Length: 315
Image (cartoon, rainbow, N blue to C red):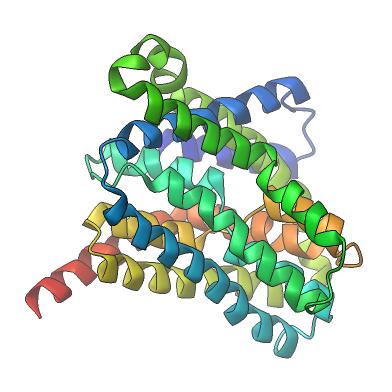
């Protein structure tokens, strides 16, 4: 049975492809994003308060390394097989080493509906994954002579809306605790799925707008947009096993690894690698990878994690 929130996404794609006048007002879309990011951060912060730093810190370091590795792994494929310019290959690689908050939100809904528990501090790992891929992408495009741009990029990444809201929500949830945030639960938690449905409706409309770019640039981005997340999910699953995460946590880490950024990375690339064509990156991440993950990828990653735990446990 298809998730209702996924059906909203499909409705957006169909409406966009038919050139419907349907659009979420800009202010509403901004409000939806703010609610989603804060809700994810708050829930993670409450759980983070229960965690020991000695347990969480190795996971944080491992996730940062994973984000850098995935960008480095994607770059030669984009350069060699895709024949993209250095700047374009670096930009696309950064998108695929980073993470999609929208994909994470859909995964939360998917696992929650099925009663699959996962480590609740995943929003912390989500926020961390935004950073290393951006740094690697800029280095791949520019080399190490970044000069004064380092400050601009650091400010763009660390003070971006997504990072501020995620980390701010984490901090509030960590300080207030479960009892402290009970009064705001109706807004941020009880309405989460409805807000997510509106977000995915708009994402479907945006995805439809990228389909023309995919036709223009050929089949490579389509193949890459499917193959790369599958490879990344294998890496994330292996890392989750190595870190001793639960089945749900391993599946969630695989999902995070498989997702591709379309918010933080485009903004950072626009500042530091302005010659890169953003259409290529967004066509792949939004036009292919996001719908692939939302419609079929998340169940695949859960099955991969479950089977990996069975094999690992039986070894």
